[in-house]
Length: 232
Ligand code: CTP
Ligand code: MG
Image 1: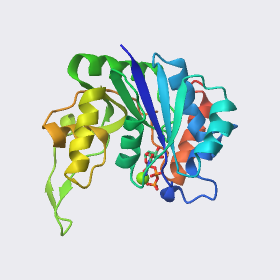
Image 2: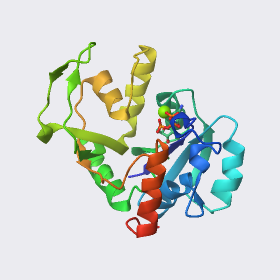
Image 3: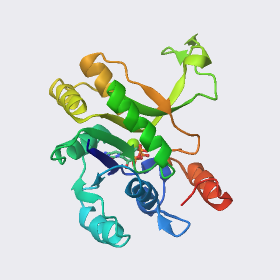
Image 4: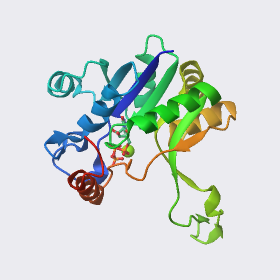
């Protein structure tokens, strides 16, 4: 079995509001994108496709892949205007594989355990999505912001990445969704659900596996590193 990771770093990081692009912000002496790449490099994954901004592929080849000697990064490819388009570019850059892990480069603290759990689930069930139980109560609201439904917290989970699939399944699902111009795709699991009405398998992620999205997330990430909560 061959396992390929797509690591996404083609976003604009608008909500971070920083002069340095989000993926290159320094955290304990390393650019943010270094962390996830480092963990995938150490993991059971065979190869990595790094998806970057259109004008940053060369910079990333030199300043990230060569500088930190990531041996498993087989290609650095330019992404698209939306996350799902970047994922599709990554999927198209894969020659041949059995299982593909799609990971947000903005989640620095993924672990080898999480990676393995998603892979084993994908092999057994066709998909493995890292997630954690919601800590807050979730309410569904209508257009007037009236709360119309409160799903039981036992059944509400927050999706993370990696989101891992059999390669042929997720490629076909993406092609179908792109062909039918289906909008508002917010994660990869949704692509499988919408394309094939297939439920995905949820596996245990971690509250440390946060997505660095806004400035306060960076404070939390830096506290995790300083405190030794995350291993480097
Ligand atoms: N991403 C991508 N291509 C895009 C948009 C997002 O590869 N066109 C990646 C980001 O680099 C990130 C992940 O998808 O690793 C999750 O996206 P998000 O946290 O929303 O990052 P950004 O889109 O960069 O941030 P923002 O939405 O605040 O602009
Ligand atoms: Mg975004």
